[in-house]
Image (cartoon, helix red, strand yellow):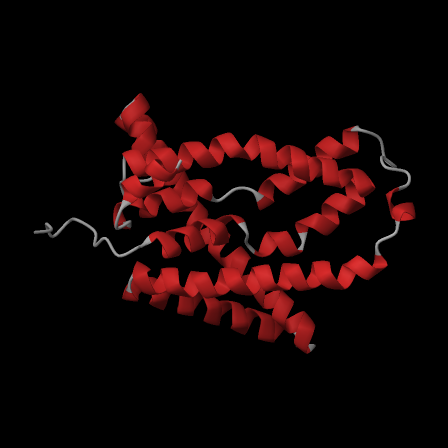
Length: 223
């Protein structure tokens, strides 16, 4: 029987995958690629490949730690186990402080897409962002099982947009667009990689939900 302080294990494998993917494949993926291309030109593709390789150790570390030490403390719990409670508490406060900053920014970004598409003003953007925050809060109050199902829909929608964008862009592919490959020098590739880094973080945030996974060991067995 679960104790009153133990979280309910309601997040299955599909929901867990959706939560991890949506944490990484967020709204930034619709903006950051253009910024990287502006910085490095065609060579920004090299930055994409480099970041994929560099981020694998982080993704695997977060996944394996979450499977081995499932705890709502997430990264702060891992740090506590490794370096003691003082270091873990400090990391926990950093994560807590990021919420009131990151959540409104993400909501305003999403609302900005909608208002730009519909031709609405700044007032509508703020109202839509507030509504997004409210809906997100209510979904989390209901429970992570519902949140996981909602994230599955969100991930499907984002992937569909990306696939559609790729399909529509294929007819316009031209080898001349890749010349010169490095128009702004090789340093620009590193600069583009630093920008693209923000498309590859988020693995650490979902580790806080590991205690609610129905079978955290399944992830480790898959790896």
